[in-house]
Length: 613
Ligand code: AGP
Image (cartoon, rainbow, N blue to C red; front, side, top):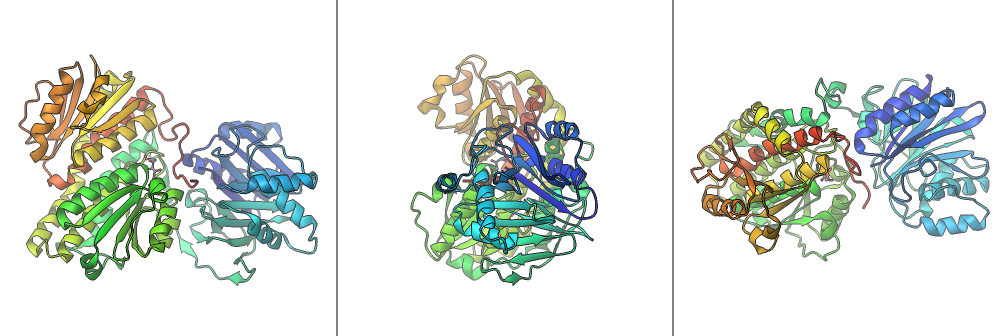
């Protein structure tokens, strides 16, 4: 997803902007650029490719020195990756305005046609360039007006989503920032201030920041920051303090952020559950999940995307088995358009690591409009979903930088286990003794995950052996099917190896035709009552030449002679097995991607937070 950074202060902006852009790399991008004020006016340097390419171009341009500027990493939506489609975009023929943008302007073509009638010539295919020319056009007609007022007027003409940084030759110390449905924060320093898409871009300069809300505009100067609402009234904004230190957002000696974050999972789960278990009892912060609400809940909707969706599928199984309340799981981008049946007594759980996924945010708003109570399970504090939900259950996994989520996913599972137990308690389906043993098992989970992380060698061997397979199948039933989906996504998103996850009983209804000599199949069997069924599925595929890696429990006593490798999980509550079975499969995906020399932390085409629909 696009990244925005801006700086205005006393020091040379260029190195600060570049450091900010590097810290935003993890969001996923295909081009980058900056705009700074120089004696010759606004200088824009931008390029397709990595930030290193931008550094080369800046060097060729003499590394322009300035105390104010904006920067951008672009994840292409309108117009492919190219120099001319890169941001910043200049407004007007004289290029007195520069704009960087994250989001999608839905009515940009109409505005572009109108501006072309006024003589504007477009250099790119982007929606963003329309915003730059629109601001220039409006500002030319309102010379007496300051830039912020013009930006407010321009925003009233835009449909769609945006986080914007705007600079103008009118004032070389000023940045105007605005947002709607895309995150943007203002970093507060001493004699300097910044704008950024997220905290990682400002934390090396300041730990204090404010969050812009939708339809607000900020005027950012070295000496002050002023925020306006849509009516142009000044609004006071609370100052937030970053809750983690810079090292948490750095590799810490690991080859990749993903490996570091895989290894951080015991801590991520522990930090998510421990604050909510006191003297063997589950104690929630004030997140609206009262016993009364849980008793009255008639249907639970879990809504999410990607890995968060897979966590939700595990959650569905655990919630229904413990709380005996109907629980459905919906793909957020589908939920919105299927005219869902949501009632006032329904509980809607929106799961999102970033808290900025546009589809999940929009689906949550729809559920709210239908009267449901919305609980966000989110990792990023004060993110859009967290701030707009009726209640929040934070996962405390710390900053997750790798595009492929691991510790964020594991922490989501832990949070869902807590919700399931609270539901069971509220509905009289769990007594105090059962609660205590549940909590004891949950507190032991981090150590069990740690044990799974100790035997990396077997997985590394398997990855080297199977790294050149063109396709991999993952099979499981119930909880294991949800885990199989996540394991499959991990492999394909970072190694680019095609993979499919199947409900083990479903394979024979068609897809088994793809199984042939040497096909790699990863089978998950952690649910005792389903062991025999899964064994027969293993036999089905090995009979057709498949090579099977089985992930199962220590006490699995089925015939494993047909399997090429068996990975056994340490004893744990069966309901928590998905938290363990995913560990070796995350590592398998990681090492296959390393073997294939893939960009593990920043896989092609992917973004860490998909803030566009
Ligand atoms: C998972 O590894 C991917 N990064 C992706 O599927 C991700 O889970 C999905 O985009 C949802 O992101 P969110 O949890 O931030 O909402």
